[in-house]
Length: 190
Ligand code: ADP
Ligand code: 5GP
Image (cartoon, rainbow, N blue to C red; front, side):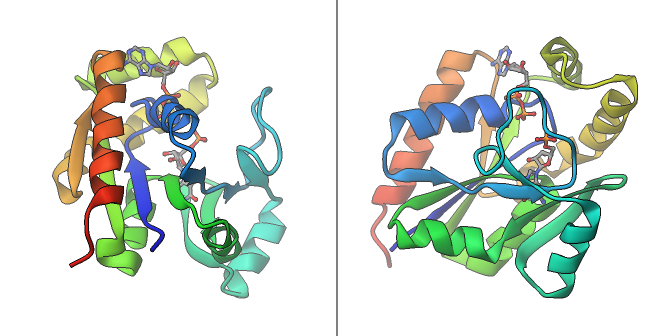
């Protein structure tokens, strides 16, 4: 049976870095490409990093119930997991890897129960998180502020998830992430 591995954390905690590593390491994983209304970053490709939608198109899909979950993650910026995406990956017989925000992760976990493992990536501290976000240089001042504000709230949710993965020294976090994935996909169904 295909399983779901949900990685969640405040922006800047290392979800992208860790999930990319896992996708490179394990052939049996496939990335759930979310839909979003935010603009693509320079290196981002349609259908690879996100399905980039206009707000109008996104709202239409909400109405026609095409999402497993969706959130207005930041003011006026919508993100969501399409049902068609989960089905697409299931057909490929892959375990599915999600990189979604805290609210979305709770929704997917609720929907799929024991078939899903929800992992919260914790930065060593809020200060380090802010430093990492700044040094990534992807956000303007306004976007940075939005992300820091939301991160402050989200950091309090760590213990609501199945596992906490501390991302301090990257090499250690990557090894810990590999182990979490292997243990979960090899776990016998009860
Ligand atoms: P997220 O996807 O959660 O927003 P990223 O994976 O983009 O986070 O990481 C945010 C920034 O921090 C990136 O520039 C990334 O290279 C860097 N980073 C990630 N993990 C570490 C780490 N353990 N130590 C130092 N820098 C890190
Ligand atoms: P970014 O703009 O940095 O790519 O993502 C911003 C936030 O949106 C991250 O916390 C990311 O995990 C979250 N996100 C990405 N896709 C989805 C999704 O499909 N649903 C939800 N709820 N959040 C998502």
